[in-house]
Structures are given as C-alpha cells and as structure tokens.
Image (cartoon, rainbow, N blue to C red; front, side):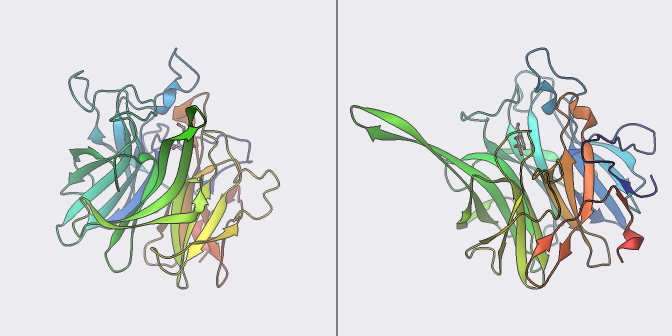
Length: 338
Ligand code: GAL
C-alpha cells in the first residue's frame, strides 16, 4: 500500500498486511512506541454465525497487533490479548473486547489496555459481564497483555457501552464512555422503563489501572457513541456517532477547553457529506503522526455481511481556530498533508 486508499464511500476496500492477509483489527487504535506505530484492534470472525446476521462481530481470537514505520506497510505481530477456550474462564470465546485502547504509563512503565468487555457469547446485555469495561496490562507494547478483570465505572447502575481512552499532555488519562441506565419509574398502577444514555468522562488513577471519583456527564452528548477525542489550539474535541448499531449515521462533534467542563455541540464535522452518514463510517480513534501536528482520525466501514472485511477509512483531521472538520478522500498520503 503506497497511500491510504478508501475508494468510493459505498465500497469496501481490503487493506492487507505484509503477509498478504486482510488486516483484521476492528475499532482499535494506534500507539507509537520504540520508533514504530503499533495498530491494534479486535480480530473479528470471518463469517456470520448461523444464529443471525451479526454473529461475526465477536472474537474467538482476541486483540491483535500490527507494526509499521510508515503507517502504510503493516507487519502482523500476533495476538496481544487472547481469549480462552476453557468454558470455565471469564475469557471464554466468543466474546467482545470491543473498542480496545492502549495507553502507556510513564511512571509504572506499563502499557494499559481498556476495552468494552462483553462476556460469552458476546451479545450486549445488562447483566454482569455483559456491559463492562475490561482491563489488561503488559510490560511491553506488543507482548501478551495480562487480563485484570472487568468493572463498571461510577457505579453498577451504569451499563458500559462504547468507550475510548484519552491520555492528556500532562500525563493524566480519562475513560470516555456511553453510560446507559434503565430506571423503572412509577406510571399509574404499574411502572415503565425509562432509559438514559449519555457520554461520561471519568478520570483514571495515576497508574491508569482504576477510576478516580472525578467524573462528569457530557450533558450535550446524550444518546451518542463511538467517541473519538482530538485536541487543537486549546480545544478538546470529540467526534461521535448516533445510536444505530452497525448502521451508519450522521456524526456530531463537541468541544470544550477543559475535559471536565461543559461540552458544546458544534455539528457534523464531515464536509460535503450529502449522505449524512459520516462518509458511510463510524469513528474509532485519533492519533498523532509522529513528530508532527497531524492527527489522523481512524474510522471504520463495518461490513455486516462479513465482519472480517470491514474497511478502514483514515482521514487527516482539519481544524479552524475553534472547530474540527473532515473531508473525504478516496486516496491520500501524509506527504501531501505536511
Ligand atoms: C455500534 C457500536 C459498536 C457496536 C455496534 C453493535 O453502534 O459503535 O461498538 O456496539 O453498535 O454491536
């Protein structure tokens, strides 16, 4: 691959690793370490399960990693967080390590992976193990991450849905997650269910392995998911999607000057997207091109008829003084952006 090639917005383009295999690293991220980019994500199943059209979205492999020096040639590094085939194990497959994100802790010198954990058989739910954040830790970027278990931030009442992790410039780190609460409210003689979903920011402890009591509700980002965090010119931005499962929908961005303060909605960042579908994708993560100010937004065109063949769409984030925007490009390379 010589450039980031995405084709038309209704196309699925297969990106391949240096062995010629399709890159299968769903909804993950990139971490730069030891002079290389490491791209990781959940390895999805090749074909839908007999039980339904969406069965390929779980993993029976785990989180995998690839490495590259130029972001274009990717060499497979293997499975970094493995599922188990023992029915007694918490990690019995298939399951979901959905939207995994890795950050490095300078103080403890450990790589910390957070993900949205959904236990066997990997269907989202509200029960224990079905709506959690999971944690795994490793001493090296591409070693075997050791599972630490799962939990729910803030309290047990809030089911965990989509999430991301953001490491700020001062070394503090945050989990941003879609907190889902279902309350029973009295309604005449009986009661009815009332659901609330809203993105929340929770500050992680100094070692990134647990949560502090510092958190805030991003009031403006109710019923939003797939958060992607960026920073430019004093503003933090999140690009989010609506809640339509694997169906694409219109992105909405928010900005703030302080992660725990109020976030202001600033509309759809996708320029000339007449389809209002985030260019037929959903956001995954953003990262800096090493040694530059360029931030690349990783998006994914989920392929529900064969999840292993999801398409990766990476676009350079563009900014004005106080807003972020994305322009679709079928084909681009970093040297043309610098
Ligand atoms: C998407 C969400 C994904 C996944 C999917 C349904 O909207 O962003 O992470 O949960 O729904 O399984």
